[in-house]
Image 1 (tube, rainbow, N blue to C red):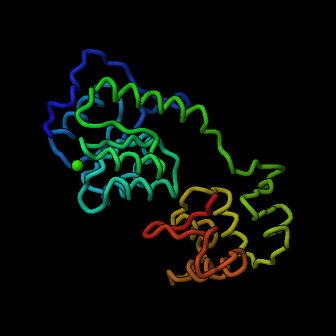
Image 2: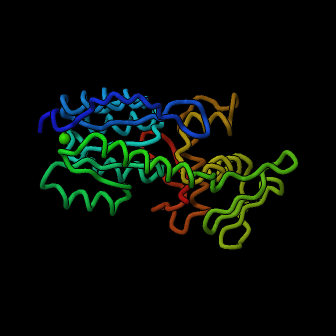
Length: 258
Ligand code: CA
């Protein structure tokens, strides 16, 4: 596959800007073919996107966490971790629009990509203008349904109750219920649960959890967080040995599954 399959040369210089903020729309290109990557980088830069690049699957996950892109172009055949696995992993934490990029003959993988949560796919060689049109369509769609789903509105200085699945937390009353049954939690475990549930569906990184729950009181032992998570799981998970509510995101932190 050569870079000439992609046609980034366009005289038009529109600017891709998120509706709600003035920052440019960030696109993460995950692609291991250098010539292809370069053409895309230049073309999308001209279209006004802020472009970030990853050259393999592992790098893609790291860049995703670091730059929080608005949209991802994800090649399927990648070193270290396939585009399918990358997509699956990202979907455990994020609804960011993902366009899978496939080579001829990889259509079956592309279908799999859609099954595991990609939003669209294009097959190489594709026309650059078509790719940009699809990207903009997806971005419009995601902008229109990006209302926050779980953030508890603040009432009288205290967060309102948050309900995620069978778990309900009421910070003002300091109450937690699972399947309607009250669960007693010590303060730190309660705060930990609140920190996770107020961002249900998103990864909360370890440092942030430690900072919010312990602040300066956190003494040395990095296991403290894990121990509290374990205790919390024993109280709110159906089966604490295979947690489905508080999920570990390896190398990053934890997520309350929505
Ligand atoms: Ca590839």
